[in-house]
Length: 596
Image 1: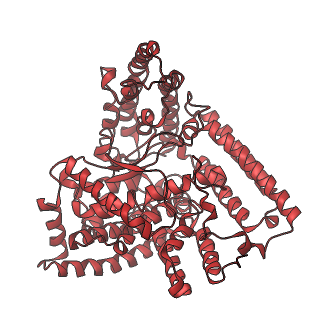
Image 2: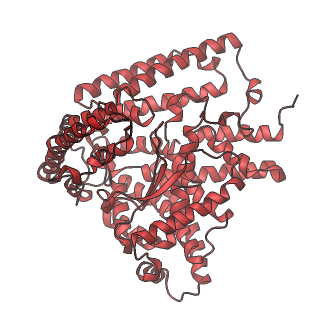
Image 3: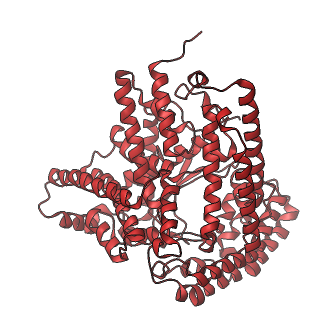
């Protein structure tokens, strides 16, 4: 069934709204044709260079392959992206209508980011504190199609290609070791456990064996035994030894020689790298000092709201004592994983019922609630949205971390669920996939400032939807918002201002009700993933600013459903582009086109 044409929404900027400044038709059509030809060729090259990405977007021509990440491959790819940039420079931007200029600007940013990543050498650190190429590979059996014998053979081929791909990653990490471009040593504690999870003696115990436990009707009975045996052999002869090799490399070579410093600014050319990462993740020309101050201001504002909740519940004691009470009182923690998952599912399902009052357009793809996979749970965040592979029969997934239940407070669960499931990431990502009329590089892209900003805005939106009735849950919402505000302070603190890991942890512990375990895992995440953490609050502040602008300009004619559709109906876009789109939306709502 064809997805609904979301670009026909009344909340969108119409052709009529842009017609006044449109260039001459012939010149415009020629430039747009040239531009889209470039989009199409680059998209095909992108998928050919990244077979895993091709699978995820429903292109299965490369399902038997893994990416080529050797030094020569990466140099060749850099040449490709630079060549596309040169072609883009030759396109007559002034001849394009506004919608195509937006496409062009986003496309340029994507290419420039890839070129910058190669120049800085980010490929030499192919992992962070909670995930990497090795943990993503373990999801392979859940992300590939398995409807016939050929698709099983593709999967087996990828299992057998894992040693070569990992060897390329190790070679790249050795280059990083040589020039001091590594993860900080302090965030690597326990990382070997991820690899050890996959070092099994019995192939049937491996997560990679899951597709062989049950076969679809499209696989003939006579083929199933052969595929099982080939799968077991690939697991035991290719996958398991490779995880063992990687574990040994990490323990014996990488960890002992990783850098003792923390901040990105302490890497070679590090301050330029961190400045680039701030621009990349926020999509705005902000400095580390500006981000830091925004964080300080937000921390002060949110703290006042938190103090009001403490007074509401009648707690007698200091702020620190209240946080200790929240972290230690068993009433706030689930006794079983099932209890935590059921509570998360109940919250998410309750929000499902609120969505028609908040959105005119909803995605077709459903989602489910599942625990974070055991192999990554110990160092993983509290929850995450996981999209479904394009064209698959799978739902979206809202992962909830059930590891160490005494560190998973229920008072945070409403905010977490609204952020990761609906109206947050699942709704936003599913709608983006269903858009028509956008080039593929936009349909399948994810900009952190937009997506994470929307997720944090979705937590706040729960207030309008009637959530957070319990004051402790409202405090949980505030502590999640405070957490994101603190990120602006601690991320810039550690990467640009010389903060220590202990300073980061103490700042988070003093200002949020996060469990101490979560504070530790989050701290290591920020240290190992420079600037990603600042995107949440910056994005939320921009969306809230634009909503208030729309409310002020439209007055009683403001419709929150149309506003939300306007925000989401162009996919994941830079914040400056979003501002342009909302200004046009406001203008159109004030002066709707005449109806014939």
